[in-house]
Length: 212
View 1 (spheres, rainbow, N blue to C red):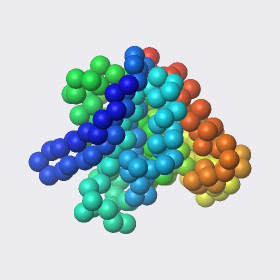
View 2 (view 1 turned 30 degrees about the vertical axis):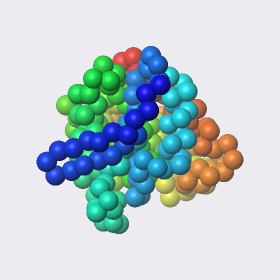
View 3 (view 1 turned 45 degrees about the vertical axis):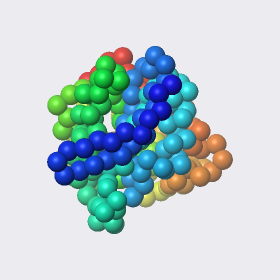
View 4 (view 1 turned 60 degrees about the vertical axis):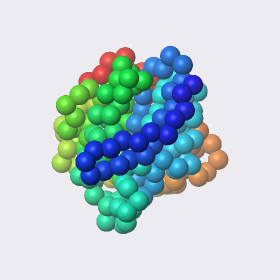
């Protein structure tokens, strides 16, 4: 198991993340965090651990630098999707990960940036999972998303359910919308985050073999 803090840089940006690679991984999942969250997100770290135990590598990355962490940037989907693409390019170049098929896991606004990045990517993305996502924030890109996409929404998260139902109709590729009964937006209820991890692991393993 490789566990390492990594730094991804270009001329203006420095992003820090946690790279974890189990032995003989089936692929790698890049986490696109939302609502000001980052690599320390306890919910995304929980899901990442479950994926690692299922034989999938993960990269949890801070999409915003410290000086950028204010409310306006949390909803700057263009900026966040550019950062997802920047981290993706790094994964495609690093010797430890360049041979691994790539998928995205997005939460809240991070789901929008993952979907937009997949629509804009010049490389194959195998699958996307959205947890309590705001895919509506990437609405104009959704018809161009041909990547198999799983939308997971809490059954008590009523406004977000409607947003995901509308986005589901617009998505251009294979798709599934699953409502997790009893869950609110943050999936804090007992057993609900475990269901997210279980469904995500199954979706990624199903689609890693055939990138878009």
